[in-house]
Image (tube, helix red, strand yellow):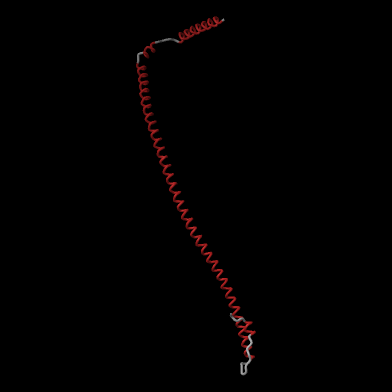
Length: 184
């Protein structure tokens, strides 16, 4: 067991004939006690510092472990996000390809429909053109006929037309009156 300053202070030496000078020994022992107390205090302070440093080192080691684990988790999360993003990108591309195919198919169907409509309009146009041509030819035949010449030969005056109109009106009036009398 190590000596304490109190052990040194309380140490009593036996007195012998021709021994050391007691005052010098006591003075030296007092100096040793002071130095020893100082050394013990320094040792205790250093032990406290070592204890604090050890605790700090343990704290930093724990922190380092936590940081390393966090880094690993972050790397795994980043890898997961990257994989998810790649999968999502593939899905988006597939969806875009499906939409593109659908749009192309719809466009082709519309183009076919328009082509059919154009063909139908062409046929109708040909039919209309033939009918119109026949109508124009019939009208030209009418214009070229002798009937026009006969119409030009008629020479009826205005008085004759008025007399005919008055006769027709009188006949209509008589017919109406006779019909009304029959009703009664």
